[in-house]
Image (cartoon, rainbow, N blue to C red):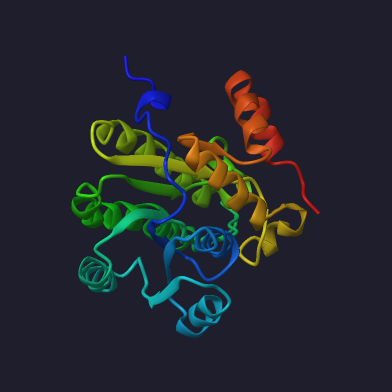
Length: 258
């Protein structure tokens, strides 16, 4: 029986790649771009806000900024055409763009609208972009898809229930995709951070989280080691708790935060 750790025996190279990062202008995406560009990779960062994106790119070397909304079908078509034409060496795709909304399932009246935005951005858009880029990725000698999910893929926070559902869906899809591509040149990784101190997480107590640079550092080590499920920092401990006692994991993830 195939073991995930045996899927590809060769270590993934961490330099001389052409790498696409969605949501690359801030937070985890920016720190990933910073780390990867410093290791002699050409990095393409994607974002919806052109000014913010170009400001981020100006702080880095070996980086190209492309304005695009990965939740917009026309934008994705244009992006894929540009990548195919201008960046034929593209061999790593990091699906990092995300949307999250605090939501009270008991009292809020716009849960559906919030959930629809999250599901499109965090899950369905990832499937669409991967599907459209897979033909090109499979032609590369070595390639990878990295889906950024979350610790809440294992147990939901009530304040982020619909967001957690999108990450659980992404986790399931990533595991299946990894098996499907096991005999190809495309490796499939999942990056699973805990709470991270970013602008994105500010309203849910992000100041109590780990720095985004730590996520990038642990990612690089795991990428080279072919560690396909990258449970960053205390995500590993939470995962083990979830396996041993799911009810306790659910209680812990919902403890009050300052």
